[in-house]
Length: 530
Image (cartoon, rainbow, N blue to C red; front, side, top):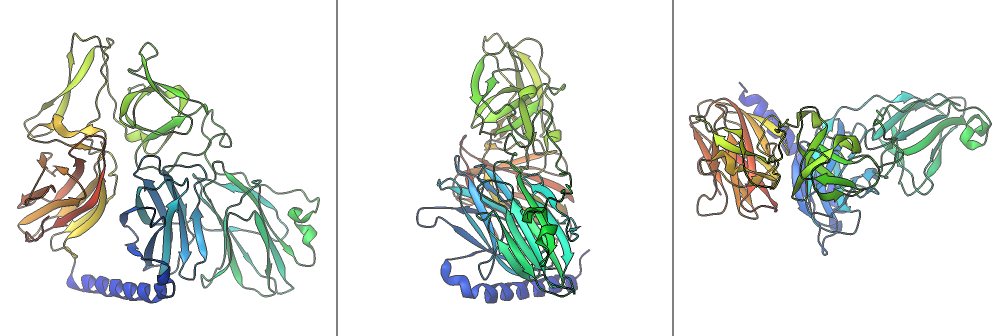
């Protein structure tokens, strides 16, 4: 049970962080409006012709590494991101040259302070997006001895490499960093290892640089982070005495380089240099493993009709698979079909994708029947139709929530708890019955682990920019649904004498094929509602 003192301390820290944020960002405030965001938050945003860059003010209240992810909501929109100091120095960025729909950039350990996140378009198309900021543990830097050439790379799978070294009391040193890409580089940041001060940086527009390290014994960290190229970004880094640059092969010496093997796990049958890495994803995704278009079929076998193709630059969501993992059921912009595992590559938590079992005949349709607890089970029903039907995606509370989760204890503050969510997806909730309907993702939109107490009501409601519905799987395993409430198009669900346990929440669009951005609210105060 939490006590009042930790709550008060947390509020004091939050207030100090906000004051620090306003003070630090004031010099650059004139550049445009800033949307506050904290570590652990999800925020939605929109790029328009009038505002082609969205700026967020990030308050870091404890020293930690940071992961920043952006997910495109509008089809065809490819985001780009940059993390800057309040003085405008770029700390990390991802230019998204691969034109992916989901991108990430990570940082070294950030000190307590205020920072700026900028989201822009990588392909000129504007639209909606989801921004996620999380604290992450960072790998310790690798020692960089004088005269040793290191050849390595950063990629979407391993976005950061860091090297530690010290100055020399005997004289100045030169740190040489050079990209192995022909026309671009990676993000480079040189910091004081003891104070965290940024002492030098370089944009991925520059292929490399030489940095003169003064005489002394100060400690430094050189950090190279992925900038979003469609292939791994190779680089070389070396430290040499100023009086003997030939000690580094980059500077022209014939010394044989000491190469550190990359730690990226190679994709079987797919050399990492041939195809761009798949974006970071909270759901299972796949793409072509051949570099060319791949057929989508109406059923799991080559005897089924071709209903479409996945081109070399597109990504599909995986919604089901056969027990032998030979075929994957996918959703490509609303087209549901099957793809052979032998011609695709995967990304995201694919081990959580549910299995489906089909009978040998292509005329089997899976239909849903409600159980006595309000949950739904699938039963196979043979039909006389000549068309081949495939299992439709269903709600699956065992999948990782799309927009995260939280733990709340009765009396939680602030009340209401809020989180940004985008409704919509391929799964129809109508199979559950009991008035449940709407279109959402198979995975929950969000999950709340709640510990009950003296408060008699736990309320969930969503306020969005369109017509939405809500489905909740309670700790008892029963499903509860709502559409409109309080005279609005926004849903509300109340749990009186709420149980302790996990509440899985799906926010769905009333109509298929769309998306609605908004905010989920969790409250114990019945005065809060749409």
